[in-house]
View 1 (cartoon, rainbow, N blue to C red):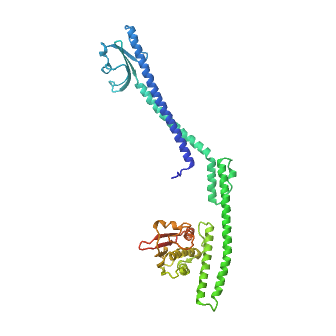
View 2 (cartoon, rainbow, N blue to C red):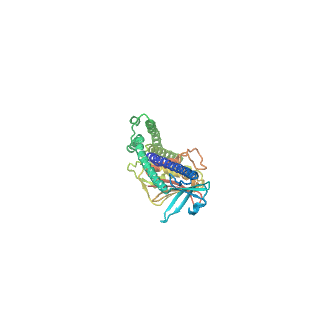
Length: 427
């Protein structure tokens, strides 16, 4: 999943984490190296000191043992008894001794022991104060790490503001364009750098998009104008022919079919023009459309699809409903829904039910899969077993019209038997 954090926030956090992590790593390395070097130096110094004391007493027994660093004792095998019991069995080397004094305080010593020439030398170095110093140093280093972390955060905030200033200005300009719905050239406001190249690319894209939209609008306008003229001629000629006194019933029926087809083509042109205008809300022009009347007209116009199939088409108006939309928009939507139901139903019935919530078109066809219900409203997708030369655009057009007027359209399989249910709910 992609991060939804702002770019500046991610930059500041990355810089702060980098500074904090680098400071912590440096502090840990410094403390570790100091501890190792100090331990090695103390051990070597104690060992050298006790060796010198033993050599000194061996050369001149009358001279007392001493140390320039710490406390020192020199004993022989006979006088070893007056040393602490824990020391008496220690071999030559440097040992860590932990003791508790009379006041209950714990102390840590390093004790260097040397056995040579029948002498046993002891040199003791109290490291308790050294450990206290280490703890104080550790606290100081931790404080420094947090201080450097805060400093990194402050520097990150400052740098992010400087570095991302052109990007922030570009984003602000784009937000203003989106709010005002008007785009202006961007490249002239930015330097010749990466952000300037991005602004130039956006200008080029906006110019191409604007040109494409203008061509599309001009094309739709020209096509609608050119198509309306022959459709008007067809409609007027059909009306004149229907008034002929010697018209036979068969010819009258064919003229009605021509009239219905002409009206459907006109309605479809008007609906497509509405979609091409890219409006957020469909215009109503104060029109109120009777849903039952439009549904009845659509059913009559679709009856030629029934042909010789044993299908019964019923209209059930449970509650009269009116919508604030042009009749052409509702007719296009219902023509696709009812026409699909009749086309896919080989036998049985197609029932159109109208109530206060909307319309349901129920058929007894092969039905649809639940997972395909939403996919059928995509462009170019046709139902299984679809015949003919359709392009799979009908339901996609219906979905766009419904979005334009705030309606909801859906498909689902029937639960009681084979078939599908198409529902149109008015918002």
